[in-house]
Image (cartoon, rainbow, N blue to C red):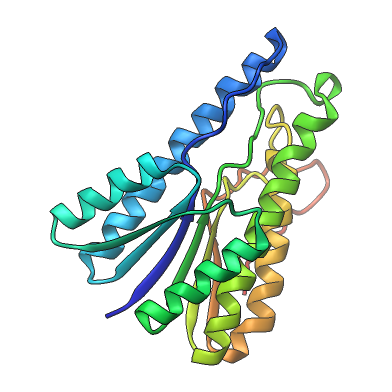
Length: 224
């Protein structure tokens, strides 16, 4: 039986906000709901295919709900409350998954990054621009590294990340484009380094739209 370590966050701690910050907070909740929906669908799909699913995130209530749905459908799911920015906790969780399941076959990072969109860059705060970049690249690296260390020993495995395909130019998307670009670059480098050891590293998302500049030929790049 395959095992999958799926890492997701389905809540943010409430905090006092100014009126301007309420817009960012609502957008963050929107991205959170979207990623939670994707994470739930992915977990159910793996479980239907016979995988033992390990759900990790910061809100037990949401994790327990998905686990109960999976078990009610005849699948197997385990829950752990973890912050993906906590390196030690993530490493320990990956080790626990490997010990219990015998391997870590798939790792999928679906952490919400705190993206703020719909505001011109000239009017955006530094914190709103950099938050998805730093949170996204940090959690992707921490979770991928933890899984990779076990997969290298196994000689096999799949590491997945999610982005919106905005790295090639997406106006009014704030830090989403730079965050996707950082994730794409990390995933490509991981794929090059880990591929020879039997590990596939992929980023899934919608392809970015490309506008052709006058007098210039557009070029398309693909991950290895």
